[in-house]
Image 1: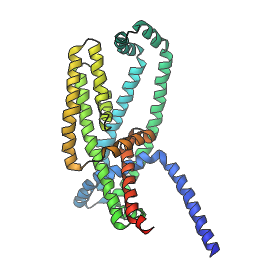
Image 2: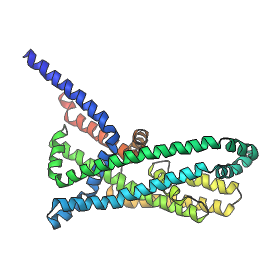
Image 3: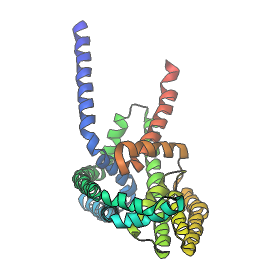
Image 4: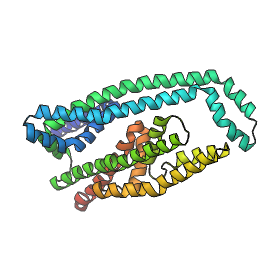
Length: 334
């Protein structure tokens, strides 16, 4: 009996060590793994409809994969490319930075000529910084490519073997069948709320904000689209962090029509249109507690970068639900 117990604990130790190793190994691919889960939840209804018509799992799965690639991966990749390209262009143009900061320097009582000389003396450092961004972009492209490959391999399996995948997940989840189904429903709910609800509203706000800035004379349209979308996605913060400084810049530089226009347009988007759009979307897909969304976003961005905007709230919401189920299912028996 003693030898049997020793073997059992030794086996558990080996399993724990292997689990930690696999967790560490899979961390760089977490975006692809979570992306597969997200796209699976979003496109599973379409896959089932296609499967009902074609009676062919491979054709239906490949059709969904191609459609998701066209609708999600290509637009996101293109926007990311434009974003980094425009950031590099802005940082590389020292004169543009000088022209932007000069009105603020004059307004605050600083000598704009001294600031110009300071910036121009650091052109080499600025160029090196831009080169560093280029290296980061190359590394990001390699990581992105690996994650996309993992994403679609997992997605193909999940779609073609969806019944088996569902049963496997129910078996792995360490709760009763009722709570396992509850957890899987919450997982789908969080994805729909985060990706469709907040995501759709944030994209609309980002595009409208960028369009207003472009109409009133601002450059770098795609940069503002991506920046506005990301800021609109973050609860409490919102797109105010973009349009308020932009309006202040135009007012300080004496371009009062543009400054007032941005103030009015930004206030309309933030305080009227935002609430209207989110309420309409939330009626369709539900809503998430803003505290979970905010804390999840902060954690997600800290550890997973931009993809953490979706991964963070998802992990936190699942954790909260699992803690609640553990309390209901196991604590009364202790």
